[in-house]
Amino acid sequence: MSMKTNTRQVDGVTIMDCSGRITLGEGSVILRDAVRDLLAKNQKKILLNLGEVTYIDSSGIGELVSAFTTVRNQGGELKLLNLTKKVHDLLQITKLYTVFDVKEEEASAIKAFK
Image (cartoon, rainbow, N blue to C red; front, side, top):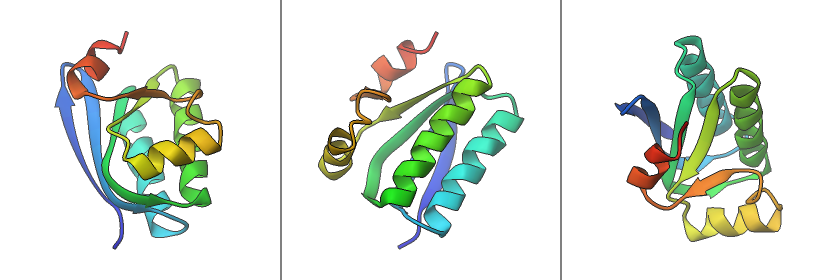
């Protein structure tokens, strides 16, 4: 199953609902293109909702880090929302949990943007 994204706006924050797998090839390309597209439209407050993401491989992790770096370098913020246990554990193991701003609920995540 490939990755799908759906984008919506709430209070000036762009929420990207991701579902499926973020893996080498299609999944990571979809994520990269979606984030670049948002930045091109000057939408720099990005919340990635990963509640429906079933699997992330090393390439997907790299793509998350790349998206985070790209957004930050352009003066924006990228936060993660609704991590599944698998994704949460993966970020803990790779020590990336401390790099990303991870939120549990959408309302508080939206308030956390400057």
